[in-house]
Each structure stands twice: as structure tokens, then as C-alpha cells.
Image (cartoon, rainbow, N blue to C red):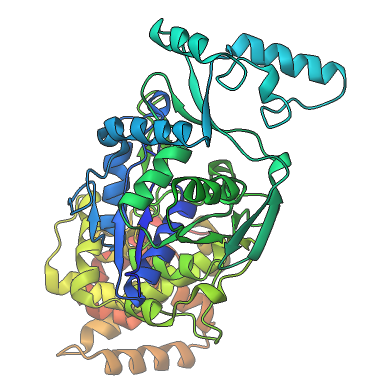
Length: 506
């Protein structure tokens, strides 16, 4: 049985879309489940669209996500080079081989001439296509004499090499997700395979590289399905065994209307790239999952279930579990809607289950961003206390800042709703009760304060939320007496003293 070898082959034209990450993930899962190889190849044949830093961004994104390649542009391997621009010299011989075998031809048509043909067809309410029905009347090696073709090439006339489809041929593409797809060659145009500047187009380079790298399965996005007939025919033209194809469903906007785009993320407030990206030309910054506070394990789990499921109700799956359960047969044919609330849920779940030693450095980094150099034992205690309230890493500071910095402002809505004329005096007396517990004991202090509240007929919600306001600055946080125990009785007193001094109600 042929060894399973799959590849992810992005173009370095900008940041990596999360849909591309899902494609890579499915390739990885399939390869690992079958004991195969996973390859990273950079397809940079279109140098006009090359963006500096994009290749490095792609590599860093997968390193953060924990998706490891067996071969690739950054680690090498036995089938390199893994960057198409470094493989440039080899493509011409394959283009010439197709011409010699009658599967391709030179075309010298100028852009202006082709544009005139399109306009002429539009005037007749038709669509111009360079194909079996029009090629004989155009400027190419099928219509010109051999001498004229040689003269033009030797004179340096610009040309392209086009694929020569047979007329009226039903082309069969067997897709592992969609089944048998059949398209007639009369509907297809003779695609450009090679340009006179020495660079192949995606179609030729892709097929040649997949063959030479012994790729067994091509798992890619649905947008490449229209190109599949050409790719099948190219394998036939070269006399090579074609890989098996699987075209993945699109990632859709949250409302399901169209492909998920950066604009959707900007509009609805979620990232569509794994890492933050700064456009080298415009300087525009696009948000990333990492910088938005997602854990990579959560992103992987969430993406895996956008278009595939294991056939059970299981939702939480780490990478090893996904490898064991994955199957192409269970990938949906229809597009998968991005669900922001579900993405948040996954991240919350992974924050809860992540071990302290792995989560703590992320918490510490958030504290340091706000000028806090924490004592590790103290910070770990705080982290364990508040992590169940956190959906994203930056929320650690929002939920815990008062453990490290005393509040200097107090939520006016809480004051208006909870703080009464006699609150100041009651808080002082409650504080005296807490100070009287020597040595301090949380349960004893709690019981004595509750006795005071009940014996004075106080509204529990109002007085205890006022106490919380004095310590936190607003009505949030874990158990009040846990806060007191953590920050200490003396710090608690200092905060209550400040609050009763600054909060005056009439």
C-alpha cells in the first residue's frame, strides 16, 4: 500500500486565514492517523503577490498551534526544496514535455488581442473562452506554422504554454467527500501552465511538485474543486498516477451567508487569523487568536468541529484524540458556520482544564503588562480562584486586578443601588468584628459578620455588596471572605477605611 503523504501548500501573500489552518489541521489528522507524512510547501510562483514576512508568519502560526510538520521549507526533508521559487528550473522541462506529447501548446496572443475577443463576444451576448472551439483561430502553435513558432520564440516574443483539452470529453473526478464529480471539457478553458518569464502557474507547479513529492492525498478547500478536472487531466497527460482528492467545505460567516472573511471578524469582533498581522504596506493591524487570548488547544478543537464531527456528542478533544477519531468520510459536504459563542465556550473550557504550571506564565504576562511583578504563590492562589470566570487570557487582569492594586474608584451604579446613609457605620463595625477574630479564621469571621447583619435587620444584598464594593471597586469577584483572606485583614481594613471616607450619600 502506498505510503500516505499529504501537504499543506499556502501562498505567502498575507496572513494565514483560519480556514487555511483548518485545511492544514485536517491534513495533519489524516496523515498522523495513517502513520504518514505531513509536508509544508510554500507556493510562491506568483511573485507579484508576494508579501514580506508572510512565510515566517505561517511557520510561527503552526508552531503556536502545536501542529508539527514532518518535512517542509523550515525543516527540510528528502523531497526539497519546499519552496516553489527554488524549484523554478525544473518546471520548463515538464511544460515542454506536454507540448511534445500533444497535451499543450505555445500561445502568443497579446492581452490586447484577447481583450478584443472578449469584447467582440460580449457584443454578441456571448462569453469568450480560449478552448477547443476557438484555439485554431488564435495566435498559437496550433494555428501558426512550425517555422513561425520557432521564429517568435527565438525573437523573444512573449508567450504562455496552455493546456490542450480534448473536445467534448467527460472528465471524472473522484472526491473522497463529494463522490464522483463529472464535468465536460467543452465547459473548460485551456488554462495557462507556464509563462515566458520562466515561472509556472499554480496548476503546473502544483501537479509536478505533488508528483515529485509522492503526495498520496490532496486535501484542500472547496474553492479548488473547479481546478480538479484540469489537475486530473494533467496527471493523465504525464502518465502519472493521480493522488486521491478531497475538497473541504467552506468556513461560512456566522449567519451562513458566504465565506468567512476578515471583514466579518472586524465587524463582529473576532479574529480570522491565528496570529496578529501587521500589513507591511498599510500598517493596518489585524487581530489574531493568540493575541486575543485564545489557547491554541481551544482553537484546534473548535476548528476540527467546523465541518467534521466524530459521530458522537463528544466535544472536548485534544490533538491526540482528534487523530484517533478523525475520518474524511465524516466531513460534511456543506459549509460550516463560524460560531463565536462556541469559540468562547471552547476557550473557557480549556482555561479551566489547563494545568496551573502551563496557565500561570500567561497570567503572569498579563500582570506584568499592568506593571505588577507578582509573588508566584500569591498569584497562583488568585489565578485558581478567578479562572472559572475567564473566557480569554486578557480577562485575567479584568477579573483579578483588585487582588494586586486597591481600587481608587467605585462603581457609581453599585453606590446608587446598594450604598445607604448608614452603610459607612455598619461597614466600620463589621470591620471591627473581623479584626477581633484572632488568629484570623475565615469561617469564624463569616459567621460573626452574618450574625451582625441579621441582628441589625440589614438587607443582606445591599450591605454585603457595599462591602464588596469597598474591596473590589465594583460588585464582582469570588466569595467575599475568600477575598478578605487572600488580600489580608490589614489590607481589607485599609480599603474599607478609604471607601467610607470617599463614598458619601445623602
